[in-house]
Image (cartoon, rainbow, N blue to C red):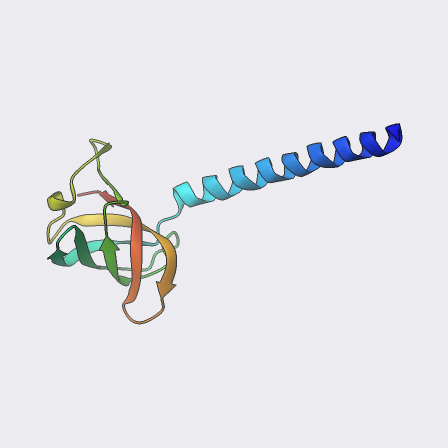
Length: 122
């Protein structure tokens, strides 16, 4: 009986360790991922939702060169060098942005996605 309890405790600790390492790995790769970097070509506003069209070039650290991106209340919008959250209304045509997507990406051209993070870099 003691052996079964000891094996159960070891398995639980091992499982929690694997879970912790996996979550740390996923979070770190998510933070540094940039799906698209480019210039805002168009801004469409519909209530609390904004859709931007971003065009750029596909670099070694990005995945797409053109994207139609939905921005909603859950999207974090920041601006360099301030590195603070800003309002959705501050996104304008001509802004250079880096965008990280959340959820599935519609593989049309341009791709369609929902933004998790929009970082205005210029």
